[in-house]
Image (cartoon, rainbow, N blue to C red):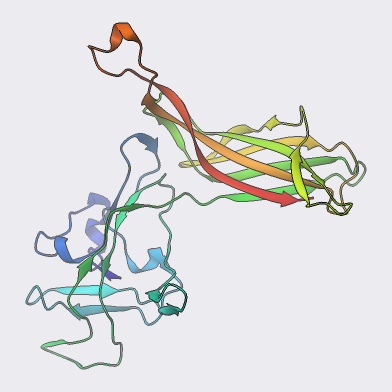
Length: 267
């Protein structure tokens, strides 16, 4: 991962722009303007990439004479089935909600030549397509010691205050599911009627939200009989179903929900 050099400490608050000569050759990111959410720094730095191998600063670019960049190195692995090389990249985007990132990629040889006049540690840069980073989510279950049917559920992570749909933050729903088909048939998880609970959201800091609530199982937990299906839906604007009177004026927009996070936990 090729990165712009960190800005001088005295200018960080001013959020300077990446030099024009470096823009085509370094990783960049930015917020999605349809969400009113947490902010980001002007550009990513080495500390925003976790699990790196041999990170380094002050490296030369073949494309821009005299320029210096940083590199966040990641070990690559080969997928025999797909016959492709890949790397798992862990990016910390802070409190931003679904930010965009465009990775600048290069082959990196940490043990290559480096001198006062430059180095040959990086290949020429290739830009990846724009992608969006899904927000991190942590789920906590707290069991009631006295009543084995009660479970407190909380979901936490970056969210948004408002969206283009005019609402925020997202809605988190929990449904209790029961395992069936244990008597020789194919096991399946079936939602229990009227078990859905909508968690209540509350701000937890700049851009962060904690959704919390309680579910009640139909029987005591344990034994692999029950699980919780957790789904978060965000609200944004989508095309409304067309109406004959509005066809000439073009499609109308209305708030709609989109699945943003899902998980299942056996209890």
